[in-house]
Length: 615
Image 1 (spheres, rainbow, N blue to C red):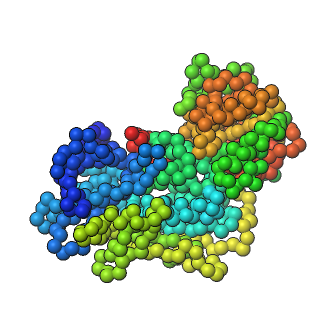
Image 2: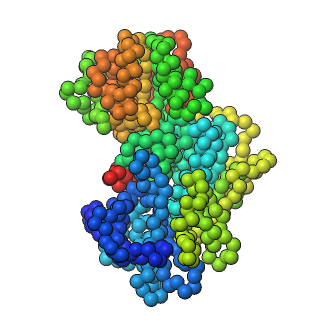
């Protein structure tokens, strides 16, 4: 295997014209991290603007040809999402004219060479050191099942999916089917009967709750050991987007909220790549079991989460309002927290900001830190690939224009992408736009009238008459946990306190802008326990949550704040009333215990921050 190339090592270099043809000429240089663009004529720029396109901002590319029979040039187009002056991302296209050869076939080969090389880099595939760059380097497009909660994000989830997500993954050449969920536990029912061999990943377009349904549905199957290997992803369109915040951080992007967070996570999804995901098995008082990818909460955090449900129409603001109301009626809860300490300690804090150590607890502070054809699906959009947003583009061999899909809220701004005054419009090159073996593109109605009808060939289970889901009896055994109510082994640590809150969290983020465990990783094999004892003032508690936005709350030296890294824990509430949540979903109140199962799942994260790091 060839050694990795330096980020600045040129992989391709060439001269291109622009589109329209009367524009300037450019020298393009492709490296493993960016596309460098230098204007050559009419006059080289001393300080080129937009001359560097980081691959972290590129969703995909394609090759095009002119509809004019006399035009022997071929065209290479890239889709980018750069950050504007105010910080938000906006779609932009750059189209370059390959015209160095006398014939269209030669120019087309050059444009395709660049498109293939760029696609390989985006998907983390190696380029041959001295070999020929051909379409054989490209794998078949991954087939994704997208599940959308149309009511997520104050009802904006479907609009955001249609206007931003679908165009972007189509630009990346990914294939997909999309289903709108209709009720609670619908996603769980779907994945429980899914033919897994027909899919390469399941992506939820919603908040954290839909992914909770998917993971528990996979682990509730009789073939759970294979099912849980199915890569899952999340595109944030809900009020609670904690896992997406952690994915955003893992990709090296700056903290983001709302649409910017969605675009960042969509860019990472387009580039592909998965990461092991730890899952927490939670056994409740009744003996039922569920699996968590995010958190178990008791006290202030769970109170705010559930009581703010009445403000769900406000979106993420609901949590701010819920926090203010929770501070006004601050409660304490008597309970017993026991845990099995981690054998490998996480990074220690700087000495100046360490938490006070107690004999009975570990208080290490984290550092801040081949494709198959499918029948149309009920309430679905399908796929392979969706026609790109372009004005009046004709599919090869057809006089009819392809359907236009609006992007970024409208289409007029795209009119200059592939058509200018006096220039013949461009059409997609079929050899790169549609990889061999891919079915023809189709855009179906997102909503079907009448009762759901799912054909046998769809790979999906038949609908069930209600949303009830049986208790999970599958999944890996909890070998670290004695039966709930039995004595714990001597190597466990036990605290009996009056708590304001107790939080057991797996990834770094509790919300898109709440970094509860700054040093946590998706696969560190740890559950991070944070608690606040009674005696803390409302002001100090508010200060903790404000500092959590930066992940610096452990540096405040708050004596009531405790932390431990554990492999398993047991929580026994001694206060008769309270609220317990698992991944933001309320569960039965009473004693519970949990064990971390390292790397049980796979999360679609995109590449790590070395590629995603923003300039």
